[in-house]
Length: 319
Length: 160
Image (cartoon, each protein chain N blue to C red):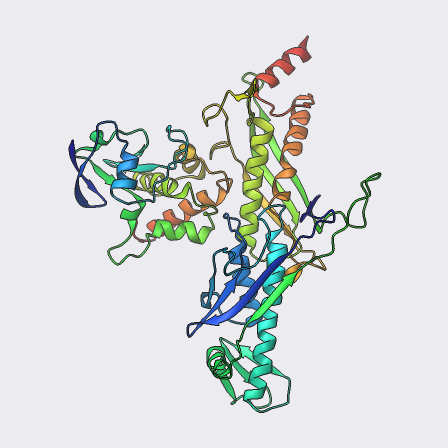
């Protein structure tokens, strides 16, 4: 289990806004940093879903304090949850404004409006329609700006300093179970992780391919932690500051990972989604160490379990 | 000193110093920034380019060694119209790119593998890519991408 978001009473939040630009685009303003995990893809998918407009119509701003407000850091497994929320709220605010002003343009007091592929129409008289961008231009003549803004400020709870307890210490919780198959070479001490199975309660996978990517990458990082990654520091100096001595897993070290997504919607997540970045890696090292125990009957308490440690443990066991 | 080589099918003559690295010539002199400097000591594979058809760590090649050579980088995979190569498309379709830093090197190694072997096994793809380190993906979707590109090739798609 992994608690994501800063939690612990921290005033964590994300703010986003949306506005029509050019003649067929919607600009999503967010300062959420995408380091490859895919928050920008998620933001576009969410806005696309709310506005019923194809993803190619959306463009994203870069994070810039002149043009965007705070989205918080890309850390604590929080961006899909926080910025996903802010973008969903912003898209709904924009949609609400589109309906409101379009109903005035259509001179109808009937509140039931719809949008499809960038056009807004009245359910009462579907012939009455205009594009979002035509509506923006008409409103601009009246000095009204068409846009939407969304914020997400979840309540967070400070833990009791005595007990460490709180009603909900983190913003949300992701559950991950992993099973690994390992082979231990008792002559060389080498451990091979042959296969991994992951089951993740992700709430709702906004982008299943990207979620799998997080799980597979997290598994590789957990494997490195379990079997090879060790920073050796002596008198304040790192003795292995390169990739030939600080080993990270390569393509021949990592297993095929079979990922099972459990989509048990989170009540507070955007479309039920939860975060998956860090929870992806925490199960792997314990699973590998348990599998080694199962294979050779030795339990290790220090990582990484290198071939030297395996050989030493096996030699001690024989004596 | 002056050296002349062909890069991405274009002949170039550049003034270099004898100790300059091929990676710097490609990135700084020619402005082709796909190949990346990761470790700078031939351990990570991010700077991989094809030199006379073989993948090399361009951070370990001295510029004068490239005199008269043929070099291919990711920029050279684009069609004349600027369309991305089917191998690049396969990386996008498979979701193989996260932060993307290793990808230009990974793609060049994969490209060479597919030239050599049209339909590699997953383990063969893993072994070919063992010198291209990726910290994000766990490699699975990169291997999926190379398989996908191989299938396209088998089906008559264009992987030259």
